[in-house]
Image (tube, rainbow, N blue to C red):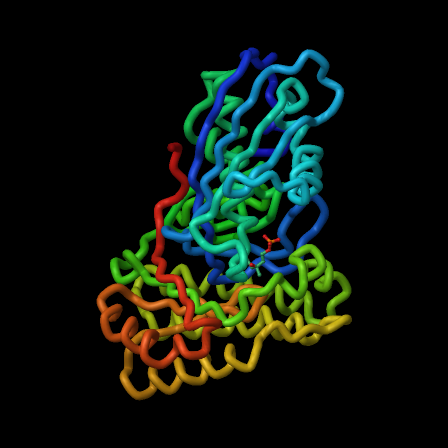
Length: 359
Ligand code: PMV
């Protein structure tokens, strides 16, 4: 698929009004996307676990306008009008208008809610932008019922990417690749695809418990963060490393070698933060409790031999990843020893999920 394949090549139909609801999950990258080119093209490929419990539900209602000169929409979070969300959505609409030419024909009401608290430090951009992209694809399908399910999902991912890069990995489950990689046929910079190779059963229902170390607003927006990779002294090595780690993961997913898996994901997380620490300007996004948790995980792993590992987003929270068959022991360890490092002892229990659902 090329960019031009996402521009409708027929005259879409029309409708007076309608409403669609989608529920779309967050995702956690194992190999990180950090650095981008123009039009939200990633500087390197990434792969993520789709989550299950952390999700956004969005209802898009619309009616036909008489004049079609400007975008017209209202946004609500948990029933409360949110005009401060509008600039981001206006930018998104401008970026996708050529692919969804019906946008100016309707007034839209976007009603959204998240399963995770707004002030949890968990970014809602991946789940939120993917839910909105899916609702827009439902509108497109109403206007052009001939589109296939495969086109629907690929274009939803393509549109979501233009809202927030990592959102393109939130349409389907369980493992999603975004960004062209030489060994993964079908992988694309334009949209996410389901990981196409064998995955060992040890990864089924893989757990992700998110330790909320810092529930504040992000210290560095991802736009600023990605831009720090332009002219970064280690950028090229980092992008090559991401390609290598993707390659290594192909073998690891097949064999189920969790020791090798943990080495890759922890190195990826620390490299992401190392990139931020070594950019200009530089940032430290980990907090003292992030390091306490990492050290406690390492000690516990050494002592017990259990397969507990971590990854990080561009923030202080820690995602603790572990296989289902060890969950009883590791859940107890999290509750007894790691929760104390979280704000108000707050953590979210999640696991690998199957993707977005129409409601
Ligand atoms: O989708 P963005 O632009 O918010 O960037 C997400 C970047 C990371 O979460 C740090 C890594 C990733 O691949 O999700």
